[in-house]
Length: 76
Image (cartoon, rainbow, N blue to C red):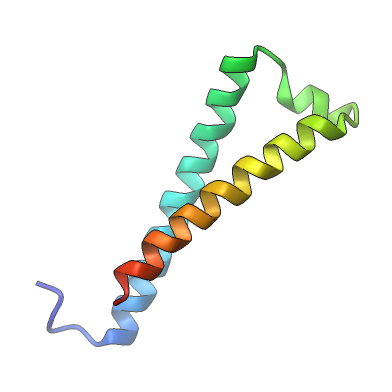
């Protein structure tokens, strides 16, 4: 199906799709974390809770790396 498209166009499409999927998974991770821990993440971040900030940072970095690997391996 995609064999007739230029590889640069395919790479751009993969990157855009990967970015959208990454944002969706980060949003899901944020919501699931809030429900599992029963803390108000946004309020804790506003109050300057560094531990919550590092926990959220870990989620974003982990999901970003995982999705980046999926997109990167799809380009082969």
